[in-house]
Length: 273
Ligand SMILES: NC(=O)C1=CN([C@@H]2O[C@H](COP(=O)(O)OP(=O)(O)OC[C@H]3O[C@@H](n4cnc5c(N)ncnc54)[C@H](O)[C@@H]3O)[C@@H](O)[C@H]2O)C=CC1
Ligand SMILES: O=C(O)[C@@H]1CCC=N1
Image (cartoon, rainbow, N blue to C red):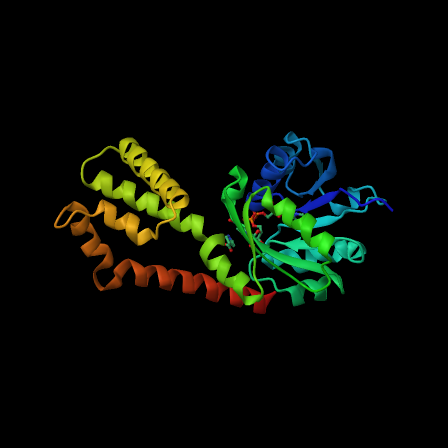
């Protein structure tokens, strides 16, 4: 039997659509091989614009379709109810769940014994700059892992971890991380406004600063501390600001508390779902 090239994407909200965009625009995945299931009509139409097949319900898909990969991008709170209708694919497809805090054990409880992977992506996936962390159960075969890995690689970097709880840690760092950066952008722009810039100019300055600094951090191999020191003249302006941010480890402590709260929530979700 030829290997199926078909992919089902269950859920095409923020994260599902980010993945879909990357697969089609950067991953060389023919849209006709992607089958999106999304109950919200507006989101379904958005998905259909990419050329992918779009359905409101899994039962609308050709019953003879044998997908190789099923990417599950629905909220953790509904995943158990949603997966009920996907049990029929459990013996042949590999399931890749993006749901925060939903364990492999829960996926297997919903689907029965199956090849199951957790993947924790982030929204920069939509522009091919994502970070995805994966963990697979032993039923995922080498070829399945490779195909799923290729699919995820279309969205950016992919790292496999050897212990499942590290997916929850990754959720708190890279999964939620873009929101931390967007909030930092809001804060920096707001500080500019407080000092007299108009909002538009403050946002331009903050956005391009974050973009340039992120690009430098990504392209130079130096430790971030080296990059920070290059900006910091002795007794200068940066030193004055860093005394506020780094005094008593202020930002470090805040960031650790924030990430710990996200991790705790992932663990709570894993107990609730
Ligand atoms: N948004 C993010 O940055 C990230 C989200 N995730 C995970 O991705 C998953 C989706 O999150 P978002 O995209 O943010 O949520 P979302 O609410 O934007 O998307 C979920 C989509 O699932 C759809 N849906 C509901 N029932 C369905 C069904 N029976 N069949 C197919 N689709 C159905 C909803 O209509 C909705 O469009 C969550 O489990 C989340 O933990 C993971 C990493 C990052
Ligand atoms: O906020 C959430 O629960 C999801 C998981 C990581 C990013 N968004």
